[in-house]
Length: 314
Image: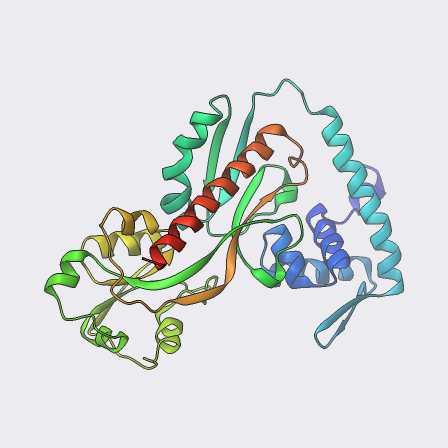
């Protein structure tokens, strides 16, 4: 192998450097590539060490390219674009229409999968593969066409399609509400078992009982007991089965409220400063089936928002 090719930096490192240099933020670049901020920062640091030169000036709450970094960024951007164009040029136009959708386990099981038959009804020729994983994926790898992720509203970039925000509220089975201790005010939760989504890596720190209780005048509340689950859909399943009170994510689990499997005993809600966004990977953004799928997601989300507004006013 040619010496120059042997010394070529990792393509993942170059992708991360390109995004960080374009957005001048490790956080925004990481969200764009669907990797963690710490992972992207390590990639850039490893690239700097491999090249033996600093590429960024790291200032307090600011990131800037060094003169060497700026020159290298222009070259990397140009070459990555050429590679992407070359890959697109040789892709077979006869490929069977289909798309791979990456999203979280909770969104897939509670919102997307129950609605997929409706997409198949309007687009029966398109096969959809759902890749459900709470870990972020790098869209530039080419194996994912559309990602649906839960992002901070302030950091979502221009090409992301906003579907809806999220409201957090306690939910329980109607049997528990009817026969258990009363639900007159948030402090009454001290007499109930709270169901928790276990998040040891801190991926979703805003979805926790501590935040909701503090926002609703019950900071420091100690419940009668607690149960913890590694997947959010397990939390909701346990609530349906009457094992305790869950922190419901609306509209993810609105279907369970609509069909009466769950009820929301309190009127107060804690709004998250984040929302669900659909992002088409750059290599797939112009494919007709991808555009049709995102248009369908937008329509479904609009209907969900309208239903939620009606329920809040009745």
